[in-house]
Length: 76
Image (cartoon, rainbow, N blue to C red; front, side, top):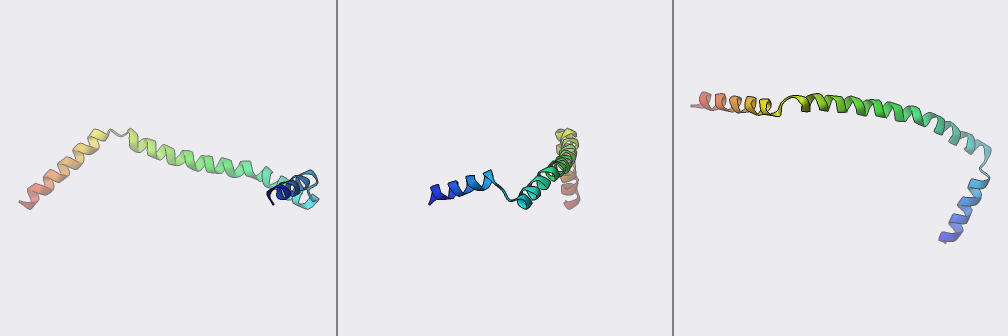
């Protein structure tokens, strides 16, 4: 079963129907554009993350501590 399938596949590769081949070619030509767009969106999210991470974590921790302390004093 497996051998027959692979043989069939290789014969298809050797002589692809013109229309299917054309579609494959078009798809391959369009692919880089999609990849580029994906990369750009990924880079954008990475930059956002970087700006978030570049803010000193300690400062954020101190801020949250102060907020908690203020909240505690308000409760009393």
